[in-house]
Length: 209
Picture 1 (spheres, rainbow, N blue to C red):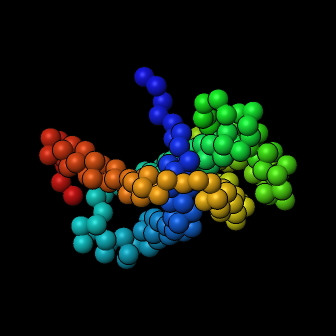
Picture 2: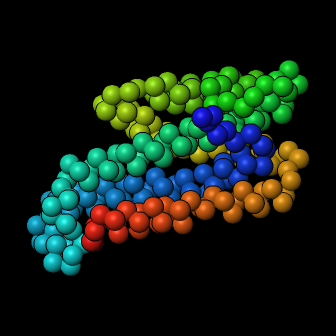
């Protein structure tokens, strides 16, 4: 089975634009969720209120489980951010450098794309910080993954600046507006599918909130 890759300028533009528009919302929501988890398990009165309201299932929830779920959400977001940027940068390079015209799009050229941006004076500083994003992604242990997740909190400003730069560069290319509208509409199309998946699972397994 081949891995799907966003190959068009329009799809990558929409992916980066959606990431730009939701980046800080996602970062802040993770911080808010951590605060909620911490308070929930350290404030007895608050915990009992949630328990009485049916907002906690004591058989399914504890501090360690909730923190694991949050950590994997952050890991998924960070991985998605890296892949979105890598594909978008590669599409921009392929369509900018005549020598690369016949090469397939990949997410393996992040370092080369950052170097190319510097050569083109699209980013003047933060090259070493942005290059570190890829190297920290390679950690495979649970502890190592923390460094990857920690990156988006420590270097969110530099990442957001890169996201804005890529969005601007792709905007300057010859975009098919009909395709742009289509891909923008598809950014949250998975929600209905996810709703069906979880709804069916709940029914089959008799999961009750």
